[in-house]
Structures are given as structure tokens and as C-alpha cells.
Amino acid sequence: MRGLMMDVPLNVSALLDFAAKYHADTEIVSKTVEGPLHRYGYADAAARARRLANALVRLGLAPGDVVGTVAWNGYRHVELYYAISGSGMICHTINPRLFAEQIVYIINHAQDRWLFVDLTFVPLLETLADKLPGVKGFVVMTDAAHMPRTTLPNALCYETLVEAERDAFVWPVLDENTASSLCYSSGTTGNPRGVLYSHRSTVLHSYAVSLIDVFGLSAREAVLPVVPMFHVNAWGLPYAAPLTGAKLVMPGPNLDGASLQALIYDEGVTFSAGVPTVWMGVLNHLAQSGKSLGRLERVVIGGSACPPSMIETLRDRYGVKVVHAWGMTEISPLGTANHPKRKQVDLPPAERDALAARQGRPVFGVDMKIVDGAGNELPWDGTAFGALKVRGPWVCGRYFNSDVVPSHQEAGWFETGDVATIDADGNIQIVDRVKDVIKSGGEWISSIELENIAIAHPAVREAAVIARPDAKWGERPRLIVALEKGEAVTAADLRAFYQGKVASWCVPDDVVVVDDLPHTATGKLLKSELRRLYGSA
Ligand code: ADP
Image (cartoon, rainbow, N blue to C red; front, side, top):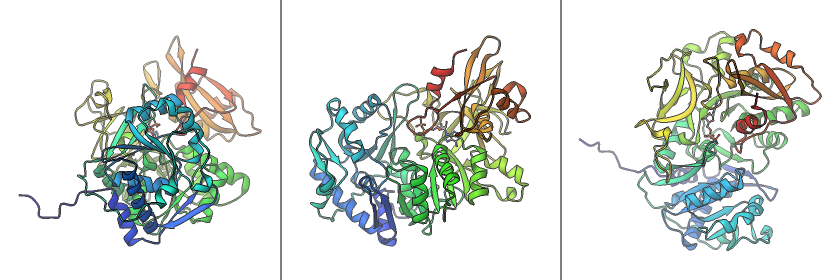
């Protein structure tokens, strides 16, 4: 027997409609590429998204078409998220920090029809435009006064386009499994792969991340997504903020420590999210300037392992709680978040700290397991480690326009490429990415664990551990560090720092000191480049 409840499909447009109706004057504040802060309420945002939807139709776009964005976090990008997806088109967010060839590949593979581009990225797109035969035109996301001279073919001005339209537009009621947005994972091996989110997966993910034991969003929060809107939909925050009526604060192109601190302080930001590298920049600025983080209460840190020393500094010096989370492009991105259970609340501080450094447990909707090389499930004892697999309504079932790949070989499961342990409470600890783990004498050494120890040394600004070939052991760990200004350490100092923290055979054999470590387009350590430079015997 079927239930008798209303059959209302979960559509992304409803999120903004809801915020416009019930949180009309709650602000979206954006640092613009042009310079000043822009602020308006959800009702204004929704009206402008409807105008933009009319403009998309006038450009000749139809449901199912893919529309690309190359843009920072800002109000026009929010309008695009809703106008494109709300109209039944697909909002393809493009990471401008990727290599030019990857950007060209992604745009052509996705068959983007039009591209919406922030001023910052106009020069980049000008160099690529003749390699993008399927793109009919470009909309520069600015007003007439700032419209640049450009060689982009069919270049239009965003504000001129939007101002010409009426704000009456009725969002179509879409089957909730309709595609809503598209994001390519960086593709550290091979070509980038497209993850095609649906309206249903996006709305369910928005509910899930808003829960107290995940991001804990509400109408009393001011949310600053530092994680870019071109990187897994800014971890879902442009959807979850309207769902909860939270104020949204967008940093635009200014992601340095000083700019972020100022925005956090001035706008009363209570919640933020980003990768560890970003918070490293903020902490450096705070240490130098003596400034504070104002009303900031919580930050979600993920994307790569958050060093325990960062969790402690944010808590002890600035009163900010770190929620360590794990996810990936293929999981929308949220898989797990770290909050204690009731029975853990009164644990001694050292034990609680050890728990807080893990990546946490799944939110309802995500199921996981770890398996050995033969695919057998491993025990949840916090020690056994294996390939981490996940499934759920916001997990990628198949890549966009691509054959079945190894990660989707087991029906109903997605293999993440991460190696993890799971404890009896369901907390995961990411040991490493499969390709980064160091295989020494039949044992596996976690590069993450060794990096976390090095970073806690006062002289070390950033640390990476990679494998180098070894005749006897197969591979051995090599530590590469960038030091704090004016600091000096010897390899022996650093090796001594590991004593008592890991088994002696895990201690890196040698140490390389460099000025700076290379990063990926999403702010993670670029291990492939480090292996190329320092990976030989
Ligand atoms: P990319 O880095 O390739 O752009 P993602 O952002 O999807 O793609 O990266 C997902 C990967 O990042 C995960 O598979 C995992 O290896 C790593 N990761 C994410 N969060 C964490 C975390 N909290 N701790 C350790 N690794 C993490």
C-alpha cells in the first residue's frame, strides 16, 4: 500500500524560495572582485535568480543544457547555482586553478553551452576560448561600468543581462532525480571525472549537513564558506544556508589570512569551513597581528587531514571548536564528521583529543565498510585498515559520460581510494590515500600520521611525507618540511621529535628542508610533484 502523503519532488529551487519567504531579510554578504562588499537579503537573491533564469532562456538555453561557471564565492555565483539548476539545466562549476589543458578537457567533456566568468578569470578564458568549440558565448560576471575589453567571443555583461529581464519566473517542477550540478574531481591520476549531482541528492545532503552532529546550522548562524563554490559546491553550504535561514558571508577572491580574519570579525561569522592550508594562513595572521576571530564558534576542517596541533591552537588560543570532517567530490562531499557521543563527553582531555583528531562517523545516509585486497570486510577495531568503500543517496553511482571505472566495480558501493580504520563506534581514521601510503618491509606507514607529528614541531610550518625506494625495505618514508620564518632545525632534531610518538621503524630516515611545499588546485599537498622532485633513492 502506498502512503498518502503529498508527492512533492525535492527540488533545489525550493531551498531559495524557502529562504526568500521565511528569511527574506537575512543577508548574503559578498566581497566582490570589483572591491566593495555587496549585501542583500534572500528575497533579493531569489528575485535576481528568477531574472537570471529568464535571461538563460533568452540566451537559447533549455533544460538539460550544461552551463559552466568559473567564479569565486559571491552573490552572483549563488544566483547562478539557483537559476541554472532551478530551470532544469546543469550548473557546471569549473576549478580555475587546474592546469589549462584540464580546464579545456572538462569544459569540452561536459559540453558546456555558455560560460559565466568572474572578472579575475577573463584573461584565462581568453587564452582558452579557441579550444572550446561547443561554447556559444561568455557572460562576464560584472556590471557595465567594470566590463572589460575582451577578445572572448559573444561576451555579454551579467548585470546588463539580468537588468533587462522581469523577475517573474515560475520554477519548473522537476523529477527529483534530474541532474542539477556537475563537478569534476581533480583527477590526480588520469583525466578528471565528472560527478553529476541530482536535485534529490543535493537537497538530502543539505538536510544532512545541517544536523547538529555535522555542521549544526541554524537561523542564528553566520556562515562563511571559505571552501570554493567550484570545489564540490562549497561543501553544500550555498544550499544548506538557505535551508536553515543562516546568513551567508562570501569571501570572493580574498582567501588570505588577513582578509578572512577581517570578514569573520566584521560580519560576526559564527561558522566557517575550509581545508587546513587556509586555516594555517589565518593562524599565521592571528599570531602576527594579535587580532581575534570575533564571534567565530566552529570551523569544519577537511579535504585533507587536520593536524591535531591546529585543532588545539584554534580551541585553546581562539576559543574555536574544530569539527574534523571527511568527504570527497564523489560524496557531495560529506561522508563523516567528528562529534563526541554522549558516553565520550566526559572522557579525560587526552582521550577526547585523540578522538577529535579522527575523521568522525558517518551521517545518516552514508554507509561504509573497509575491505582487504580480496574484498573481504575487515573488523571495526580501530586497528585493521583497508580500502574504504561507501554508499548512499548522495554518493556518485557512476561518473558522467564515462565507462565503469575500478572505483565502481562492486555493485552498490563506491571505492574511495582512501585507506582507513573504523572503530567500534563507527569512527573512521583515514590512514592515507591508497597511493600515498608508504609500504615498508610488508608494513604500511601512514604519511598523514608522520606529517601530523612533524607539523607539531614549533619550527615546522608545513610537512609532507613521501615514499622513497629502498633496496632492503621496498619503500622508506622521507620527510619534507618548510620551516617557520627564521627557524632552523637539523634532521637529527626532527627525527628525535618522533621518538616515543611512533614505532621506531616508522620514523622518517631522512629530511629535506624546502622553502615552500607545492599544493594541488584544492589546497592539498601535491604529492605527485613531491614524488617527482624528491622521490628517488
Ligand atoms: P581532490 O582533492 O582530488 O580535488 P576531493 O576534494 O574530492 O578531491 O578529495 C577527496 C579526498 O581528500 C579524500 O578521498 C581523502 O583522501 C582526502 N580527504 C578529505 N578529507 C580528509 C580528512 N579529513 N582527512 C584526510 N583526508 C581527507
